[in-house]
Image (cartoon, rainbow, N blue to C red):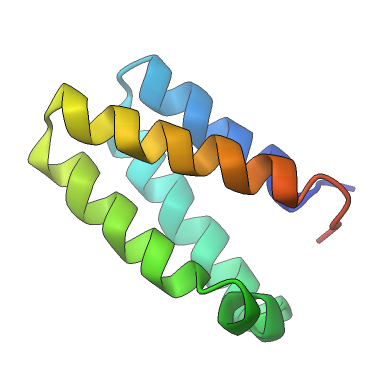
Length: 85
C-alpha cells in the first residue's frame, strides 16, 4: 500500500530531476485519486489549492517557483506520513 506522502515524494523527486512533465502528470494523478477516494482530505487540508498552485508554478518553469513547490511538498509529505490511500 502506498501513502500520500510517498505520492508527494515521487512528485518531489521528479521536480528535483527536472522532469517537470511527469511531475505535472503525477500531481494530476494524485489529485484525481484523492478526489475519488478521499474527498474529505482534499477539503480538510485545502489540497485543491496546493495542486493548482503547484501546476501554475511548475508551468512557469522558473527555479524560484520550483523551490517553493518543493518546500510545500516536503511539509505536506511529513504531515501525511501515516495516511494510507
